[in-house]
Image 1 (cartoon, rainbow, N blue to C red):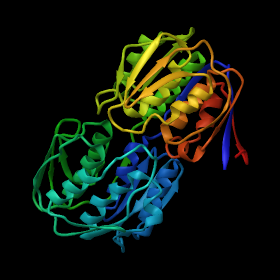
Image 2: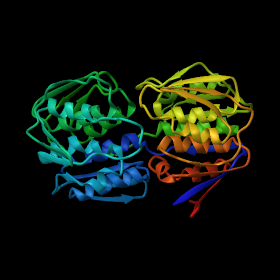
Image 3: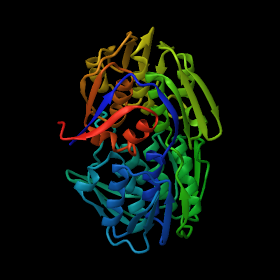
Image 4: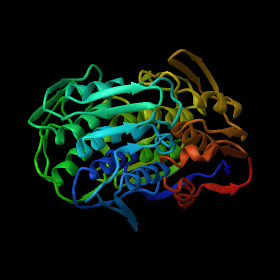
Length: 419
């Protein structure tokens, strides 16, 4: 096991290129199973969740290899339709393979997904979408058994679930006839998935709006695609500069996907300049409290940005109220921040952050991906040394976080055997 050693107090300065988006590349890798040919996926980050997805593809009988920043997947002749427990438990996003495996193989056997413990995140919307397309799903104590010939349908999701929308798209591409999915999620990752599916030859329109239409049964082929930049990684580096002070530029990300976050950082006292492909942030003084922040589906304030922003606002003046509307257990980082001297009160889905003049180093543990990133953000603005444990969570979504931060001037290192 490894730990980060972070020496706070060093302002950040410089530019960092943002790697491919975790939440885009995972459904894209699942989609590669649909095409009987070779797919080249560029800007594919080296994340543990990506490695888990590649392991699933190999288990299913696909060839998958890395070539620099790209991954090459050949799904010419998959041989299996089951995803075993040990692979499913590596990440919660593994359920995204349901629609792809069923669509390509005609049946699927999956166990319960794993990943971060963020409270109940049921997959009932995924199952409802597959059933709406004609899939027969039997739920057992060991997982899911799925079969049936898929047929196009008019799907109406009761909630704008990103994963359920993506699963519906993957399955509908293989269905007979047309599908219309309304009330689905509108995230940019869904637009990225649509672009890849269209490159494969599928006919998909409407991603980014509330209605997506898919013409199923169109022959597919291999293709190349470049994954969009990860807006939450960009958010992490921007909040790190806000916490530690300094000037940071992030490139390779669409500034429009982070407008709700940069608006809050501006209100907190940062100078932010956004332009196509890049965002610059300068922070020369302590932050101040902002108006209440409520997480919401895209284009609202992203739930994944809640923890890093909270960490930055811990040190400064004023009070900020966070309302977490997406997950029930997304404040597990709060107790760890309080170990560093933060003043945060939580009741249910509401967290109230009272700014303090300074934070101090402490030994803290990450319990989930974004909470772990938040602890690093807080450590950069704290006095003294902080030890951050539980790095396997952080590695799920950040490709060498310590390397990028070190290049910006942070005093951070990964040490083995500190647990």
